[in-house]
Length: 164
Image (cartoon, rainbow, N blue to C red; front, top):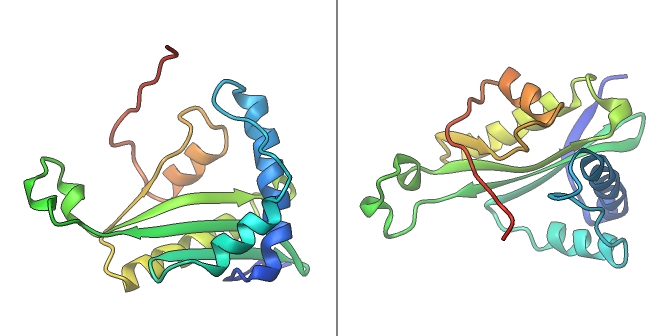
């Protein structure tokens, strides 16, 4: 079955919340120090607000297969601020597409839905002036890192954390 990509609506909020909880369980099992399963209480309503209040520089997409929402993506266009000309970092002065969330139900992975969602987000970002895309992923994610590398993303920096 060919996956379908479309803009998310408020009616998708329960499905998105369910996928979010699944994602929390998956990532908590990978690293319970960094990730947790979020509270389910009010989660669908929270997603409903996020989707309904999205600005022109925010994109919410869902991927469907067989009439079921099996994936979602949120992307944002970051625009340079007034101080960008003073930054040492070139990206601070560029309009950049930030892929903030991409979640695909495990049973729908490797079906092309993640690629379709990300391609749609990249087109949307280019249409809004983005000249670069960035994604922040867990460095040892068994799914995210290989997926984004296959899409042409390359490591540019390393974040370092430690407990205090």
